[in-house]
Length: 487
Image (tube, rainbow, N blue to C red; front, side, top):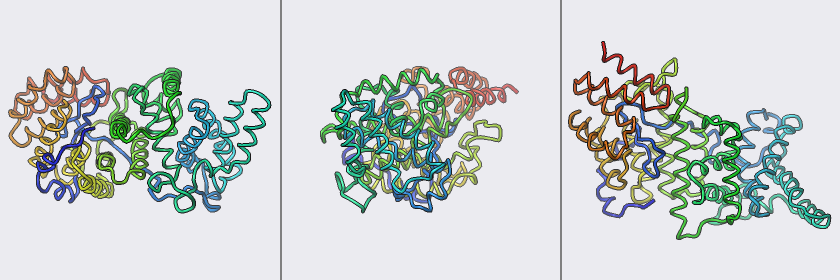
C-alpha cells in the first residue's frame, strides 16, 4: 500500500490523537484496499466497528512449558498451546524439507497425536520440539521412496535436534533476521506464503486460517457458511497453487506490496468475524479473535511498522465496543444507542496507545487514520460528545489517500454530523454510482432521511437496505427501523 508523502502528514489535523489519547473509538470505516464487496458501516447508523478480543497470549509469553504448567494443563490450555506452536512447526518443516502440502499434513497429524497424548501423559517440557520431532517423522515417512532413502531420512530426523530447525525462545539460542528467533521468522514467512499473489483473496484467507491460525477445516467452513468438503477443496487448491513457491521472505522491492496483502487478509478475517456477511449471527468471534491474535504476532515481528501497529490499534479499539453492540436477544445496537458503560476501557487504553504509536512511526496510512477515528469515537462518554469535526478532518485525509466507496461513505456520515443531514445526503447521492447499489448506502441514506424528517422516504430506504443484506440481524434491525416509521 502506498504511504502518503510529507504533504499528507502536514495535512493531519492538529490534536488528532491528543483527542484520541483521551480514549476513543472507531465508526465503521472499513478498509479500502481490495473491497470484499462490502461498504463500511456508518458509525451513526449500523455500527461499523470490527470486534476483537485481546489475545490470551501476551507478547512476552515464553515458548517452553514448565512442569507446573504441565501439571495444570487442561484441554483448553493444550488447544491454545498447539495453536500457538502450529505455524512455527509448519514453518520449520517447510524450511527444512521444502514441501508445503505434505508438511502441512504431517503437522496436522502431529497436532492430533499431541491432542490425544498430552492430556493423559502431560505436556512435554519443550512442546514445540516434541511437535517438530513427531511431524518430521511423519513427513519423512511420506517422502521416502526406497529403503536406502528411508534409512537416511529417519537417521537425519532422529539425530537432528529439534532446535536446529527452530530456535529456542528469545535469549536461549541463536537468532535469525533482525535479531529474531528463526521460529518467529518462520511465522511471518509462512504468512507471506499463505498470502501469495497467485491466490485469490478467499484462498488466502482460508489458507492463512488453516496453516497459520491453526483452525480446522471444519471450523473454517462453519465460519464461512460452506460445506466442509467445499472448504477442503479450496484449501487443497491453495496449497497446490503455492507448492512451487520458495519458502523465503519476499525481496525488499516486493516486501511492501506483499505485507500489504498480509495485512489486508488479516483485516478481512477480522471484518468477517466482527460483522458476518450472512447468516443468523452478527458476530463470528472465533474469526475476529484469530485475526487479532495473528496481527499481534506480526507486530511482534515488525514492531516498528506503522501499518501493522495501526491495524492492531484499529482492531483493539473496535473490539472494545463488542459488549454493547448487541442486545439480550442478539439484536444489533447502533453506535449512538450503545451503553458506553459496557465498553472495555482497558482495551480502549491499549488501542489508543497503539494508535498514538502508529502515527509516530511514520506517515499516516489507511490503518493509522482509521485507528485515529476509532479512538475519537471511543473517547466520547456520550454519543453527543463525539468530536465529529475532528473525525471529518480525518476522513478527508483518508479519502484523499484512497478513493474507495467505504471511506467516502464514512466521510458522508461525518459531513452529516457536522453540517446537517441534508449536506450528508448530497454526499451519499454522489456515491450512488460508485457503490453499485450496495445496501450500506441505502442504510446510510435511510438514517439521514429520518434525521431530516422525511419519514416516508426513510422507510423506503430502510426496506431497500434490509432486502440487500444477507445478515439476518442487520435485516431485522433495518426492518424494525422501517416499521417504526410506519406508525
